[in-house]
Length: 69
Image (cartoon, rainbow, N blue to C red):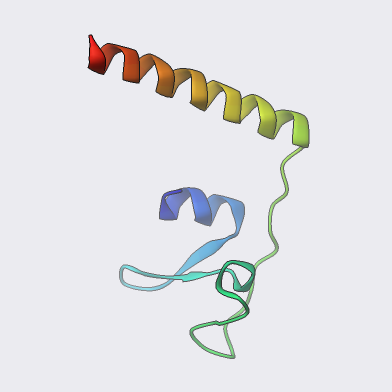
């Protein structure tokens, strides 16, 4: 996932310049600063998540087929 995708889901946020803080769930509880505010993770409906994954997989397969041709 890109930093932008992580930021949209609440799993990362910019702390300064080009540096990002990952959510403690991804880092085993480690944070850049103990005073860092941890955002709420934005949950996605399981059906929508499955649909997104299938669409990405289909698009990836399509790109792979074009690259091999």
